[in-house]
Image (cartoon, rainbow, N blue to C red):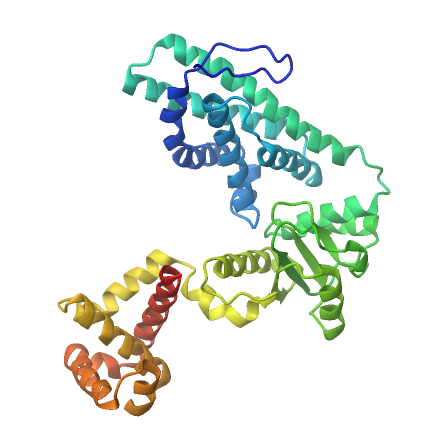
Length: 403
């Protein structure tokens, strides 16, 4: 039974799109997200800092949801799009927070539609689809863009129509500006600080919350804490370091909501602190960092560093462990694990054996084998450091794979 794309304003059915077309489009979504992002950055440089800043994941999720919801609608009419709707409204709110007119965002939507139509034409040529079908797709797509624009306009207007004296809205806008990414727009921040009666601190601490933040009690936050709990990835900015008093305040306000405490940094580096804290939260989800109600980013800096570029650490491990490439899988794994514990602990064979759960004599046998394979590499400080970094990164990746 053919799927019908609905007009967002009139509710009149457009030309029918067969459900089979959804099956052809769905595998294209990941590549299409990247292509649309590239074209938008090229056509609208104002969005470059957003695509590469701390909100990049939320932005890409919004683009992906918009595409997926369209395909879902072709496949199954009436599919729920609540998440997409909220993300699109948030796009509009961000434009208002950053003081831009809505024209750039709406232009980006239409550009994204043209990129999607270009991809659909390519699919049409590959599968010999009729021109009539591609035309019906174009009609449905641009009607869908009208719907996206309407949602973002709703979010935009909800911010712009607030009274200027709405300190809460001003402070959310201020938070967004501070964490948008370097360079810090100091003139705009200074003006907002005056309007919102907020003093820019010498240092600040970002706190990332696991969504949804429904249990957070905003009234228990100190008055100078900036917060936006409505974001898909909610976060707070606490002026200054997290003293004992600030920690007690956070514990009361978060009410059990899992959180990651970012590093205390100057406001110009707030975007970095936010990015690192979000990465630690992802590592918690991946099972690499131990879960806890509150996780401190500063306790996991080495892990952040080692896993900051998985492809690069894989290359490092391949280079440093090349002397063991000729060994069988099981034997190689045992030697690598023994080498990791030996290099990281500098402990005698007896202690290494206890950590590995094997006899000390077995450890000595393995270490002699390692000496034969690596030779003087284990005595060179620089090579030994690179080897230890590679082994630690492999171990962390292994924990994620095991989980």
